[in-house]
Image: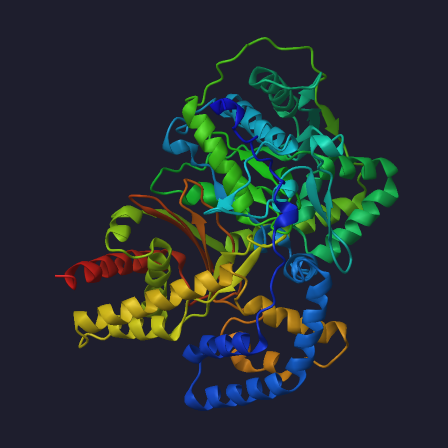
Length: 612
């Protein structure tokens, strides 16, 4: 048989969806024993004993009943967690999402062909927009390769949410509107919204079934820029998306009531492929210091991004890029996958367009002008003021640790992600003289519509190791032994979490069943140790490995006295973004990074010397 005939057809993006296993429910006993291990580092003997009693009572009593109801729900739902997680983690949350929940990141292109350069903004934005549209087309035609963990296919459902998706505020709870369709499902919106100087424009990115070329996109962007130059700023309606959710929902209802056309504009923004922000700032950054660009992406001008949009591409005046995204519809790995694709394409073409320069007669962008009254103007002022206050309070540093990276760590036969997590633990404990409850994201995409589970890196083994490191009388042999124990525990927890055997989502499910059944909140969730150890979203260190690519993100801390700690691991470096609140006296993002750097050196030294 001819070789080329036996070749299997390429896999389509969503072809494995129906075969993915359902999300499992761990056993009650296992989850509770893991929970006890997780609270141990934060408890005195007496406190731990009290918690042990609470857990036993729960396990023998109401916990059993709730667990049975959860199993029942799991029998009829392929993912028992999906809707609950969306509601509790995102849609019911009332604090402003743009700075507290959204994630943002710097474009990595300044590491190769797009160094900061005056006058390059529109040219580059048109090329990056073109590559983004190619990615949309790959998903739309289902030619994006399904991702795998080894040979296991991963859930690809979140990729449907990258384009044509928007969160819509509600008075009690938000909703997600998704207008995306694959080619086989039917027509899909193909317009882009461009924001500049508080004004908004839209144009169709497809003409005669062909995606606009970079020269055609450039003409559209130049038109927008010319409209805005030398003109007063627009109303900046998009600043409303940075407001507290219920307030924004009420203003939105008011907007629609004063002019039905406002409703059409909202629909145009919500259904657009994505938002492109033409930002006039120049956040100078370099491959070793991404601080300015990361801060500008996360806390920049609220009148030129739509905080509820699943993807805002930010094009800065110096030719660099950033992104900001609503977190509700997808986890960062979706954006990381696309940004990595863009990075590789831009690098491969040296950031240039090598195709035809011909420009078709395409309709000019149309300006979207809301009808506003004094109430809306006053609401916009209020939104901007609270946003700027919060933005000024958010401290962000984003630096590269360049002494070594994945290669050196793997040479010592250690897991690079665990290495970074433990270095961060040691840094925190050296600074704050106590263990810090910590959240690390584990992905559960082996399962149907799986998203994430919590790994809690602040294990008793990690704490013991930190103590050994901070005790000058402790010898290298004992330190090394303690370090390996901490590595083993962490690695095991990560594998279990990815297999759907973590305990945080399980406990969440049990608490939500109690809520749905109108039962009183079980004592387990009222125990001070529950929140002290991070439960209920109270983690002091909120962290995530963004991956082994060039793409990095940042997000605000989960709690006022906490840190956000996000990192990417390369062969020769680890790039980290740390966030903290300035108004919290005891935290400092830069100090944590410096301590992290020393911890990294100490750990590599420990792994080296004690092998002799």
